[in-house]
Length: 610
Image (tube, rainbow, N blue to C red; front, side):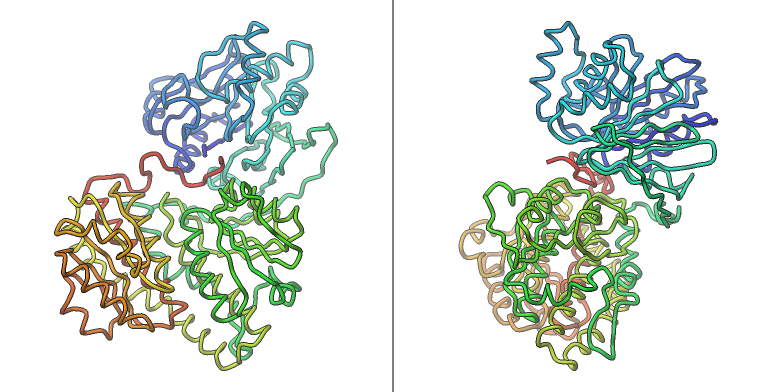
């Protein structure tokens, strides 16, 4: 879960690398470093902490280098410090390497290299790679072949970039299970783990696939597979604006992304609503509609916030399409010998499209013969390319580590998939049209909630010293309770749990006292009366209650301490609205505690390791 950027060309690469690292910092911020070649001399500079600290260290030096690689780290093996920071170098610093991923057999390789006389400085698995490459170069092979031979010995995942004073006109990159792209310029080329890092300089991108190794020079690139066979790669044009990956006038990316949701949600269904047909148009699923509708079962796999979106989709699909749905943690999916048949459809949800557990689960389902669909945000991502078919959510770049607008856009796309399947089966034209009309109104209803965020900020002030929270909901809003609790945990470091409201009596009610806030997601719907009973149970035990309620509910104000109102909509779309106040509540609590909401401790945005 680290960030990689590299440059080779005619400019001084230092400011390019630093800018790229800043745009990648959401992928890891334990430490950062650069490896440069200046007048055929290696220069490696590393610093524990944020990129700004590395930038300050470099600014005191006068470096002019046209070849360099850089890295921002999220620690897996070895604590965050300068020794464990990347780049890692060989014994004479003539080869340096940056790595994203995990080398599973690093202990075995390390022991073997130590027996051959190689010395290790760090605790990381990554250092094994540079020492292994050095070993093969000692056998008088090219840097490219040394990388290829080394990668043939590695078990695990990697996205790597290597530079060397032996061949200063080249950067070698390789990928297996961790994203890498090549950006093409005029007399200069770039490499990165995320397009966002280089979009200021080029929109012409080559995506590397697993098992591919590339030699990048300032005016050319060549890609081969690990068996040394030449591969022709398609150059793709990406459309991402600089404004979309900048904070603008907002204090944090998270707040910007919360406030963007009227637009991001609209973009998720723009051009996809077929009002006359009461259905949806999803080009990425064209030709697969009947196959999906005839599935014996739909299995949804995801992690974190995307898993919560999958739980909402379970309610949607079973209610409207009548197909059994199971929702799995992608991280557990492969490890229990899942029963999958060719009659199953498996949907894999990931904002980045690079989530390692989700990608591995997808490959397993594909191997077992299921129809595999991807739902992701990043165009050209691994999940998008590995799936048989799929749908982009079009939420736009999401930089804040705690996902907000991606979640609501995922819910929109999952609703569109539900409508498509249901209309292919038995959903009536009138019912389909009613859902579409309600969906079309959602952006303006989100805006109504956002316009009320000052009230939510005031409520947040009351809870900054709380140590625990309980989030409770039923039906479609149980997954929202889970998501609300996750948001609070991620950015405020307050312990929070999400539960089905009725399950409170089976344990969590023991925690209720005057110091335990309980957040109820309680719109007026088919289980409203049941939730009111649960509220009374908490009230009787002196719990402090925050209710997310619908605007037509005047009764709930009388029995709870705080109420945040949301507009009405149909049940399947209500989670898109009820989650917004929970995002804002978590945000304001964390900000008032003086915490970094965009880069919470121990977390990174795109989880590309298991």
